[in-house]
Image (cartoon, rainbow, N blue to C red; front, side, top):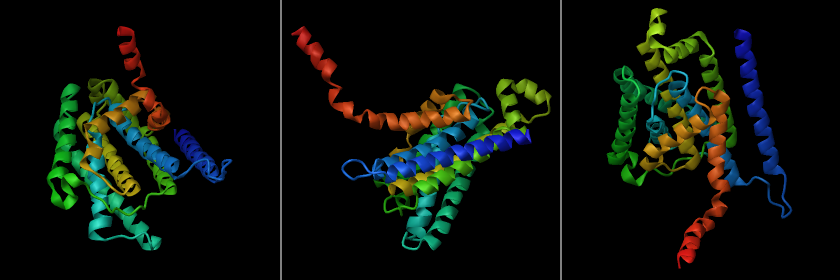
Length: 305
């Protein structure tokens, strides 16, 4: 089992490194007019893919491997985003002029955001994970909207205006390192004895309890573990876009991560990486078709006339 975990870890790292090398080459190779094949816009889009991958894999730990149904993952992302942004922007006034001081503060800020998101996950999960199915979904959805409402009415967090002026500390390299570390940690956990306990809880809680597995504690721990990575993802996201708003973390955002997860496969880590890649790029690739969206309606009017 240790060999298998090492093999999967190595394969994951190699895949991410190869993807990074290809992207960097495409960002250097020029087009006919002299510009790069991948400009800054596409580089930022790829960075969003990396953040979405970590969010989707962390959600898969709860919804796929533990068999729960959470639809409030964006709320924990909001906790991490606003916490890290407040630390770097409002309290410490971090500047990108000196990377040697900026990045230690940045790392401490996103980890603090992850820990506060984990604490929020515990406050939500401890009393609610005894519930199942639709009841748990309603509780997590309510938690998502509660977090967003608290942010919206808190002036120090920017309120309904949002929080801007965040230093751009998230680069493509930061996203790749963050994605590699996060996915490897979650993958190794899933293929450990604790991960087998998660799958036992998913398959049959009664059978798991008969094998001396504390199902409630197991579900709460996985929920908190998942919320931590969602919070760290929020911190990386905030320092990529440099502006965050409560609507960035609405119920719709949580639904997007559910779509990413179930399209790729809720019990597949590789699928949880493919889903975000497809559905992050697909709307941008289809943006050129926007002008054709009213053609069928016009055609029906012409036929009826």
